[in-house]
Image (cartoon, rainbow, N blue to C red):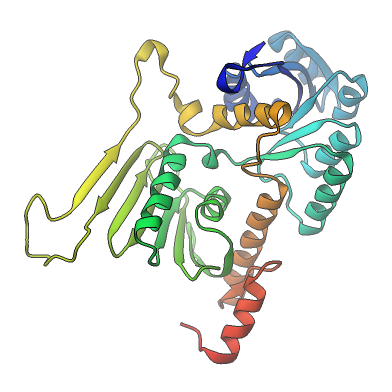
Length: 346
């Protein structure tokens, strides 16, 4: 039995794993070993040779092809890591098991609609591995941002910089600040610059940059408002600057503005806050187990990934058209139509 919420013990969720490639071996399987609420019972690969190697290494039943694993039965849920994602998700739902899927999960809005319909009909869960929504630093940033908005509800500007896998940050911004109505994007040889207009009127910008070596610390999210600045850097350091009353810039004193800062602290022998925790990999799997066993609310379901997909599609259209593009399928369509009839482009 695994420890649940408020001391309640959970029956471990019996899971299968589709795909044992580099990401599964280096990230998800090590994270899974730290989540007693999930019990790995089977894996599937595309080839007999890799299936034999996985069976020997992980000491669970291994199958060639995910259909064979699903037909074998006995699973409560499946983690979809390899493959095309959508066919695997639909097959899992057909066999009556819950699904956790690695990003991007779906790359076509029509397929996303099919997945939502099948999931609703089957009564099974589909959760998507949006790890940044589970990362402790961004969870704390959201708490700070919500409290700050309660005290000072003025507009905010969101500035992000990240690596080429920037869909993670579109998804994070949707969680932090709600739907995006339209985007303007420009692509260079090694970077993409994106400006976003949120449905609530806030603005944001995302810069994604390619490096020869992704170990260069480049990740940052800054939220600014007239009364302060909230900054999270490299997934583990956060600072919140507050100036509750206007002051001249020349007043260089220690009390000009307040600042609070956070960074992870832990003892080395019991350092739960390893990179697997800091990046949200362990918390997202723990959350999935609680969704299955306790009905916990979704943090990132198929609808959230569909929203992310629509933002990415709008970015691609804007890169081609060099104009602002509406994020289709939400209130942004109506917002843009209204603005185009009365206001010129900024």
